Image 1 (cartoon, rainbow, N blue to C red):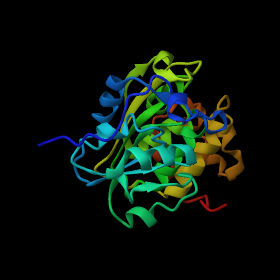
Image 2: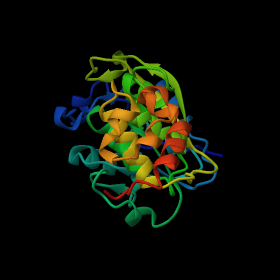
Image 3: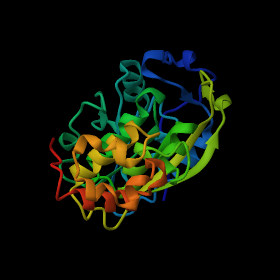
Length: 277
């Protein structure tokens, strides 16, 4: 099968192409073709036909996505980048969405279809991107991309570690999380001050929790908001009966509980708590 080759001249710098990295958008343009190709290969492209790339910039990753057997859409808030993509990636016509990913209703693009998400994510909104993916987990079976390394590690971290937290538990309750590889600052323009990390999330076959999901989110967030305290003290706000709080699980700190134990905790609390409070 002949691979599609967009009209793309590899730039020596972003300024040569008239697209400036904007600090307020958290932009760091990837310049390494090999890493771009490697990131494109992190998705399986199975079980869905559509892929959404967040923040394509000048399309260094996009062109490798277009070589896959998938229907590629991109969402970009930067007008300069949109103009560049429209001029150089004619194959994407009608699938370049000049929108804010965090604010846009993605069902306007995909209706109720399944789709994957990929990208070199701006550091300043990367955790918000993950939370939106969790909200839309019914439609997103696969997700991969580049984060600040410490954020990527935190998402994939297991219980018992200091970096394990809210994002770790909530993500791992619904997805298998894998940290794939580290990317140095030197392959970006402008280079960030820290390493980046690429991860992959694969939705679990059974991603419906055996407990009240709103209460589960509430319990996890409440526990980690006072992570140095035991569960017994951090969940005082729920006004649970004393006999329940005597259970051994309440003597642990939140970072000691796997997502499965948080599910068990939620099941214990469920008869006594109202998730909507």
